[in-house]
Image (cartoon, rainbow over all chains, first blue to last red; front, side, top):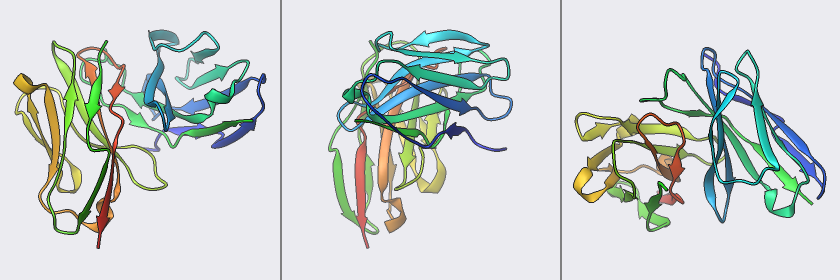
Length: 115
Length: 113
């Protein structure tokens, strides 16, 4: 099976702009989670989507949003970008059969640089 | 809130030395615990996981970890490291029935040939 794919791999934006990142989960996986990775804060959970619904949400401002489509592909959007949003954004997918004992598989990430 | 902590962020050791990385989690109840590895230039890969059962779990590439509930710990071990084990190692935990993972800050491990 193909792994989790994320596009684009690299992005450069300026403050105030918005950005949309895309994630395609492993075939058959229905849960998609997003994480932000920075040198200072490490890996932090953003949100999880399952069956097109947000199932979990981390402690990020409302500028960070996401959605999931019927084919389980997911997008996350960051509006009004700030310098501190520069990070590696990771997507992870799992089977989504109830999240009882699931393993998340990670994509390569999208590296966002905000100037 | 659930949290996971890792100590000794930078570890340098020689080939054939033994490796042990500590991981502690701060929340109670039934937990799911993971170790992920990130090799240079590559994405996060699962090393091993603990859900229930035998507290000693074996993963890929000769790694193992022991879940000690009384100590809220899930330490990673490898008896003899190789140069190819140079990577960053992350411990992560989640509550039973929840995909929201808390990650430790990671251990940067450098193995000198």
